[in-house]
Amino acid sequence: MDYVIVDGQVTDRTSAKVDIEDRGYQFGDGVYEVIRVYNGKMFTGEEHLKRLEESAEKVKIKLPYSYEELKNMIDELIAKNELETGIVYMQFTRGTSPRNHVFPGNGVEPTFVAYTRKVPRPQETMEKGVHTILDEDIRWLRCDIKSLNLLGNLLSKQKAAEAGCFEAILHRGQTVTEGSHSNISIVKDGVIITHPADNYILNGITRQKVLEICVKEQIPYEERAFTIDELLSADEVFSSGTTVEVMPVIEINKKQVGEGEPGSVTRRLQNLFKAEIEEQCGRI
Image (cartoon, rainbow, N blue to C red; front, side, top):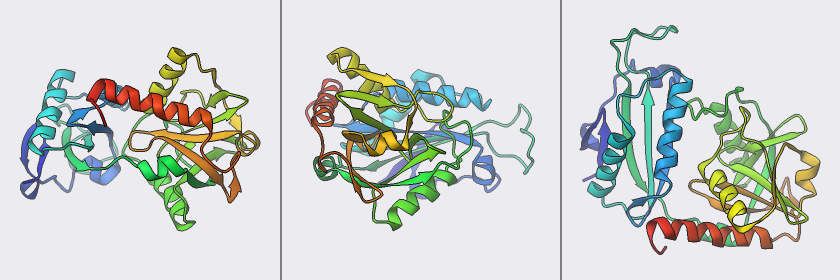
């Protein structure tokens, strides 16, 4: 049986229902998180749940559960679904009320849903690297909020898929921001460069973990905006994200990156990131 959470209750997926006037359905008025699971354990679960709380606060949704309550519910869901390797998806909307652009009154409680899905590690693409395209970043100006409003991301991701590519690398004018569903970093002369964590990007948990690894291992890095020209002339490029981990980019707009294969800095980060996973969740 496949279990899900609806408003704090673990239930069979077939009986789970959300009202058609839920504001997430009608307005995309909500926030979400995706948490990686290895060996039945959440990886960086605390960081994801804290970011969920921050996103909710930024859009003025008051979560009805504490951090510990959320963690316990998600742990229970993982256990009941016997999930070993995969993801937990969870979202809060502002709740259900008659359609109105103004927020509903205090009597309306947020809607909370969560489910799990088996998702293997992308080992083949992490080994070989991926192809990407460039695309103009048409999203809103609060990309730091992990909101349900992902239409801009979807359009770019679809454009990449139609080009036979793994990811779209987004840019505002000449400035590279991030990917359609990942953060983007470049390597030049051994230095990792990644866009600063401002309103133009989502401060990815994997991105944060990579920078923590850089500090620990004394790998030089810079948080600064970089241009399309810098991207295309980089020695190495990689994307990072919950489901892609540290993913080498070997081609952009049919132009080879570096030597056309994953570089040494990216390889080192992959190994160090795997070690972080195994420290929290056991051998993978």
